[in-house]
Length: 323
Image 1 (spheres, rainbow, N blue to C red):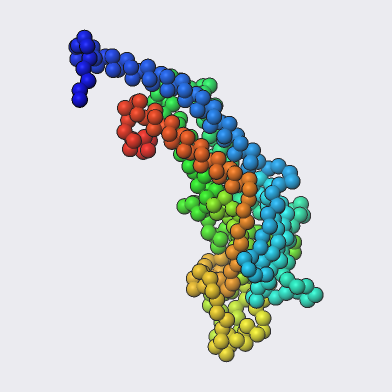
Image 2 (image 1 turned 90 degrees about the horizontal axis):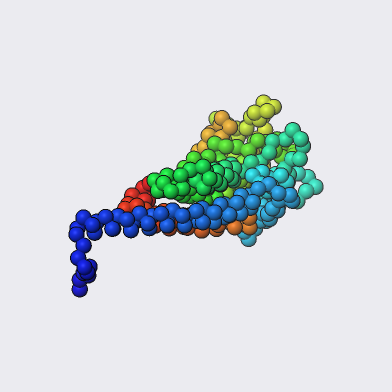
């Protein structure tokens, strides 16, 4: 099957008509992309509103699965954890007399350090940058310049991908728990040196890991465990392990540990430590989940728009994906 043009058109004239047709298609598409940009802005603003600091914030329940090891709650306002109480029941943490669990409470003192979710701050920064890009593209740039619009769409796509990646978690620039310890004075009473409290975001959920720590080399030539030295007071504070645990270690019947970091050594607050016990709790945050889903939809929409523009501009799919 063949297609013929009648009356016949000279090759030069046919080429010119094809170029004119592509130019009209490109002009129409660039105009249509203005509506796409407005739609993107509306979606980005919804995401920004979901992550904005608004009282009373999001109160999330924390509970270990099928155990009483960790129970409590935290309240997130924007990128900060403003309130919270955690009860721990771990063999390596002694329970104060008269209480049923070891209690951690986030301090509300004016001078206390604030628990800060860096990933949320990154996401909010990238979303605000996208909003600025949309405004610059629509109002200050040349809306009829295909190369300019293509470059701006690529920038939007990259920023949205990065913002969504921050909510997904475990990005390359994310610090590990031992590299970014929580300030002890964020709690009242202060967090003991042998307890690590680490909050992150994973798949748009709040992920809390509480670890109890011990020195990596637990003896000094005798049967006495090495002590942690408080960076604030300089005083020794033994890790809080019970006499039963110490006797068990002396007699060669050390308590078995069952977690993925049991045999690793970490540099934590200037000391080499091992993780004695570890409890992991995940709590779904509805606002983060909604923002994560919206960013995914925006990412797909802008990818479709970039491919359409690339085709009309004569770019291959590889060229569009590579920028």
